[in-house]
Image (cartoon, rainbow, N blue to C red; front, side):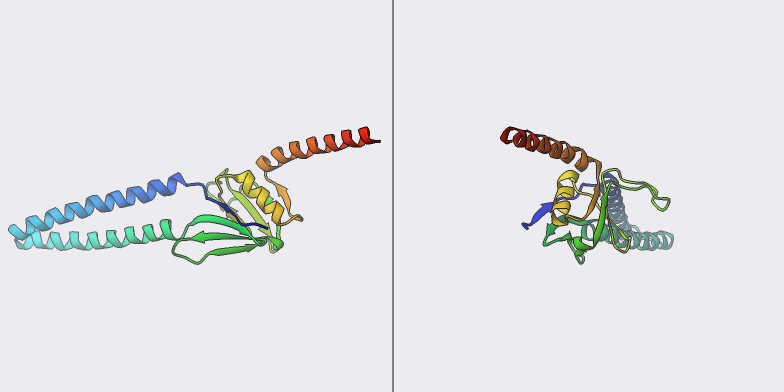
Length: 185
């Protein structure tokens, strides 16, 4: 089986959150630097106490922005690779996640659960033999599902975009095979 790569779908909420955190951090850092330049010329005791508080806030904000950037950029998958009957979720700065497709039972569209605040409609969920749920968010959901099904023929598939397309193709192939069989007989 050859190696197939799929890019994950970008999450708008994650991008907006990270962008706003970085924008706010940049703005707060500029204000801190301007206050530091002002304090170097005009310093009194009350202003120095206020400056020390702002310095602590700026440090906490920079640490928070660094942690958010590390998580959103480094710990989220940037590529899904299907090869040798397993799915590998590649991450930039964190350990890759492996899922053995021979232990997978069901590939399905997202199932709404009470634990999820929001169910993302373009997710692909794979349940393994231990009934654990693995979520994937590929751009091409039907192609990703096709690669998973080709890797493990025993897997049960209920992904609507995949079944609609391949049900039509298999129905057409069956009709053509039946016509050929009738003509040859």
